[in-house]
Image 1 (tube, rainbow, N blue to C red):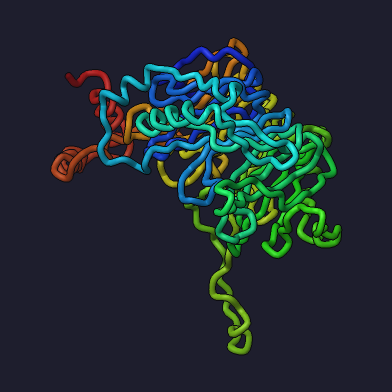
Image 2 (cartoon, rainbow, N blue to C red):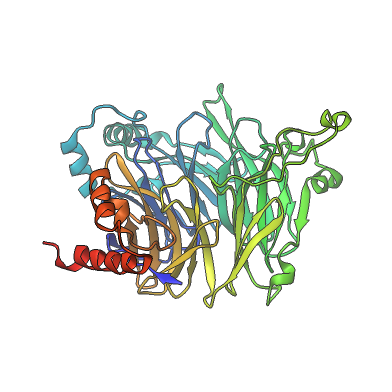
Length: 484
């Protein structure tokens, strides 16, 4: 396997322990540029913008997972922070979306300053545990107004909602899972339970809350939860299960009910939308090994379907187009990487490292997502959907890992790899691009113009094939080593 090296990187000191899903990349403040968000088990949230630490928020609890998405369904992103001790914090930026005029001086000054929002602990917002609704004390109204004015000018994130949720959440996902046009919040718990919530607001009360919709119980421990669209565009949830298996959850809008005392969802309805897939269990060396899954891989490779000639009576029953779903990838801790499409394993690869994180990233710029698998020892594999692969060796053991498009400079986003080491440091490799996943032989004829190519053909016109090959080798050597 070919080894590659990436040299462009940023490095930050980050005291604290970062969980597996405690970091992500996205546009948290709706300015058009992507930021890096990292939460620690010590209750601190770090937001990096460009090459600087942009904001630090303390006092949150044991942060296990973070997500960026339109949780309010207002057309703007918000930051969802989930704590393992049973709290959900939602942060929002009051800045206008994609400002056309940016004060460079203000941006540079605010990027160098770190604002500690201690008001979360000191009375900024208290929560009624029974109802999960924000209760803001009157004594802190003046402080809130001052903070809101500052945040609106600087674009800093402010906490707009805190709610009690079940404990032991390990992964959070914000996506439309029931095809109703509104995003839901999906939680994967270490209790082998998957829950869905939707934001519900009451204009009369002036505030809203997250309302529980569904609850699914899994047979084994949950690895990750990802979104996957079927061939007809129906969104489904893929829940990784041990041994290279997963559960497919198809959530219909009519099956989503509010969790209250007056309505209970029947077990038959909940079971009818769950499908257990055992496609990779026969390939596993250890059927109890943990599994990671990544869905909705973008692909530009056309599916080659054989054309058959049907008789006239059968043509009316044959679809002219065959729909295919998007591919998705699975990886196990013992080093198995699989690409699956329509429940068919396209290929499988075995590596000698323990893979704990699976992500996607377009490193070639061709519109297709490459599969990025990271091992505990820092070995990182990048595979395209044709099984071509390269490897990158990070120099330290890795505690958490993610990928995405990050903006080191405003307006320009590049593919990046983010590592959190056990030495409490964050390493962000940016501009992670490859011209091709496969090596190509050097052919100087491709770089020549039409006139130069005609001259070369005239010089080699009377040569035999052997002489032509020898002279082409001499010409290539001269271009590489002797030309000045």
